[in-house]
Length: 284
Image (cartoon, rainbow, N blue to C red; front, side, top):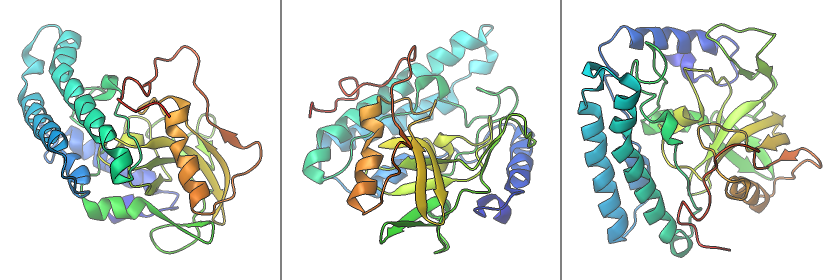
């Protein structure tokens, strides 16, 4: 597993692929992530948030116990199994957003309901599953620090995505892979996390923080610690551009110089996006 978390290593996909195959051989994902732990590490005294967390935990337990495999209509069974879970995660995001300003946090959005359950074997991706990292030591491997306007990885080295590969299959394919771009997410405290080797069907934006609500998600290009390109491209966290642009606010706040003409935050036409109103974010 050590290679799986080694940033910048070209054959990092090998560990991810092997791990994914090992998951496929199991009856189920043996350690379901609980992203409520991420939020619980950021204390709040708001009763409605604590209530929403409890509801989410309960709905997740019901979801994990649902017998969707036994039903004849798998698609309908999956939709039914995730409906209450989707409502619970939205309720939690809205509760968090009600208190964001007072607690000096960023507003958050949630995983697109279509992807709920992707971490369970066979639920979304054939007989495989998406890796969800649910432990603090795993999150720290992806954490980015900013000093004097430059980005540093978890090893204290200048962050660089030159060797990053976005794979659209288990094996690298130069015809389809995107080289030099990494996935990023930002949590409600403004902490940035970077994945240099996302793999379609194995590791997505949701993998980095175990499917937690996030303040921003997209793609980024970094050379020797300097941001050269950043966008809000994410299918799993499909927020309106104004919401994802919170990452730009945080980068600027920490003295990062954004590249002229290399910032691409826009609403994709034809896509149903998570709006500020839907997420319970007050109008600015």
